[in-house]
Length: 245
Ligand code: GLP
Image (cartoon, rainbow, N blue to C red; front, side, top):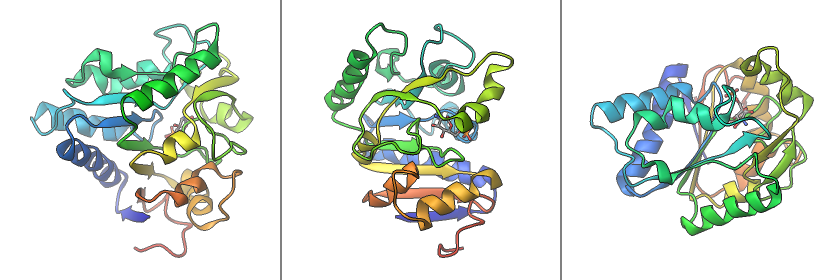
């Protein structure tokens, strides 16, 4: 596990973007699993900037969204598919047929979840999973209690997560359920990069990297990953006691 503590949020975002660029440099056909949320926004802005400057191409890459709310109509402003499209995909050269998102509107969601897992396997697995972290330690939508051997499936969101994500919904209620890749799916990625910025994430980061490895702290599962990079800004790292910097 490598923990990099950056002086600023912007520097942390640039460092995480560099991890994506490096993955594509080593393997232009890299399979990326990408998160939504406020944290990765500046990462995507940096990738868009680098792409416009000729510094990175997604032409041969494949992208899997990590998760999606259940039941949102296509194009809903809070949909994660729409988020990733607007933040990154429509500004880079990734072919549309290689941009995957969990299907969250199908009648049989278990079948859709199994199909998503199969699509990842058919793409020969994830080369790089970029992850954020929830204030309760969740990764993707794997909430506290999620089994470490979980796969893509339907999950029930915690009240805390629904409250944290309320701003994207305005006055509308946040869906109670989502479809998410599982923790086992993420642990099989050849590289995981967790990005956390801001003081609101400091406790979750400390629990994940210095607390007990437990299904109550989903991000703590990453400590069992052989190739994990955690990119933090000073605020997110402020409750770590043992890490460098
Ligand atoms: C969301 C997503 C996660 C994300 C987390 C943190 O609910 N499912 O993938 O890491 O919340 O989001 P933010 O970066 O906005 O704090």
